[in-house]
Image (cartoon, rainbow, N blue to C red; front, side, top):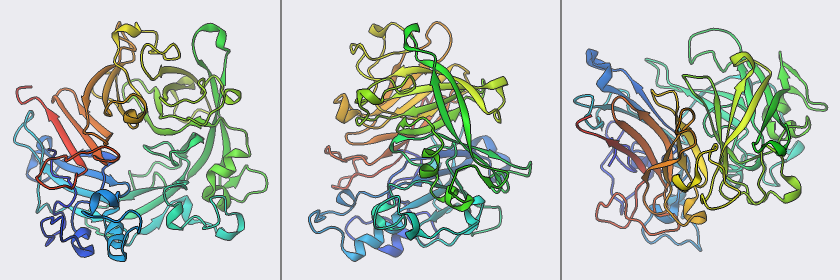
Length: 464
């Protein structure tokens, strides 16, 4: 079990212990939320022992009421009270953590001064480019007749990506809205989706001003031909909003920033196979994007950056900005992984001998550690494609083992593996276990009742 972020664990002062048969809205507002997707560990804390103290931040992405509530009636849907409990379970969970030494497990502090839940009823101060201008939601309706704010649309729209800044000494978080950027889970996770880039303006302290101003671009990937045995080429960033001016014909700045995907379609970008995560290698500057899958791509729609029709297993692309400049407007790119069973002739493991690699499907998150050549991949979807549990994999990007995918761990049945935080020198890995029991029976983490709990798991070596 992980360092304390587990559905229902008390977080806010006065929150009760979790009772699966007596859930309530007020209790859930103070308890760890449901599901665990994005994960961050921020070192530092009281007592001058920053190496062994910190904060864990987890995104409670969505809820599975059929798993949350014993006896849930799927035909009738949630009761009004269950719906409000679900709303309280969405958001973010922030907890203080500590450990007794470098190779000891992280544990959470129930009474941590910086513990908090951010949920549907949390009030925000709004900052960033997304706050400016006005768009009539009935003017375009690109997401269906219900409009972008309807509950049916909340898991589809994804154009607005917020950064929550909880400033020291302030309880009210700041939602810094911007669109089409390159963080984790950025700008939605839809098939035939686009890849965007945000160039922040100013050099103020982080994270106060980084996302308050900036320019918005979308990527076009161009291949150099399939004949060289590799999938590679060059790319450019196409402007959408620059210096406060729209570059999309017929759309205002407010419209572009609100309907970013619709706006991007008008300038001719490359539609990608469900980009879920984008991360830069902190040692080399190379950027990696996990493209989870796209079973809807037809043979007529393939291109060199998305070379497989009916792409149920997904792939990973590496790109390098020109002159290693993050603000460059062009880049080179290549595919480093085309996932699936190694025996499948359409798979590719960066040129490595496919008889020596692990099967992998549906790359969802990528992460790095202190070793420059280490690329870690977490998956989401393998039970439906390979018939195996999702998990976490290591794929070196350089050296004699380049492309050698090796499985490190599996998550419980029905779960997705998310948000890995890898500390190589500490022999420590934190992962999120999201929606265990979804479609497959699971009792994780085996607490004696019928409700599986999503949360954070810690894998460590006690002797280093």
